[in-house]
Image (cartoon, rainbow, N blue to C red; front, top):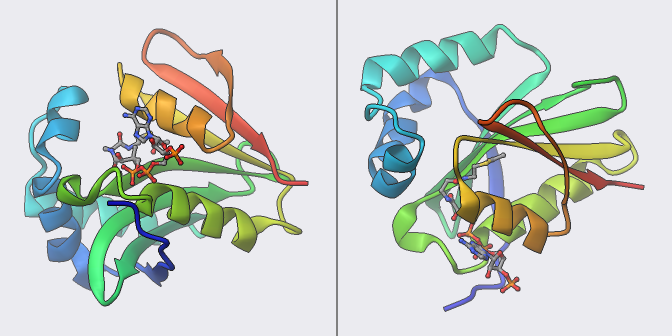
Amino acid sequence: MKVSAHLDFLPVSTDSASVVHSLYLNCPTYIALIGGDTPTLNDIQRELETLRHDTRRQALLLKHEDHVVGFLDYKVAYPDLHSATISLLLIDESLQGRGLGKAAVEQLETLLRGRMDRLYAVVYGNNEQAKRFWERVGFEHLRDSGPTLSWYLKPLK
Ligand code: ACO
């Protein structure tokens, strides 16, 4: 069932590690797809600590009706001063296909419009579902960097 969602964007802190970890555990298909091991809580803690030191990187918990439904990781002023780049949008697997991912992207676009001219999305691995999603929400395939990295672009002007 599709929802017309408004999401709350909450900055992730190192205290949020267990919430982010649970979200990953709830996305086994994605983890299998990118061919990695399921991250441990310690892996997530280290990742969030790394994020904290990069002031251009924004890691957000996505909340819908008081429940954490996803995670969004993007970087402003990257790869150039007038662009932002999404490196991961992750929606809880049990809630995928209901319009939450699209709502997250639309809200991010609204947030960035006027500050950034372009929004990129970088898809890692052989993630055909994600590629279809980015095209569906108005991004165009820009280029592949090697076999495992595909860049998508949406102008924000
Ligand atoms: N194939 C075709 N179309 C799709 C797919 C798919 N696999 N997934 C979504 N869409 C389409 C929907 O049909 C919908 O189109 P509509 O508006 O015409 O009905 C539109 O995309 C929006 O769909 P949502 O329901 O908003 O998508 P969802 O909430 O499932 O979020 C996401 C999509 C983020 C890819 C989610 O499925 C997910 O978390 N997947 C696992 C993690 C992942 O692969 N994330 C992306 C990594 S790449 C990156 O983040 C830069």
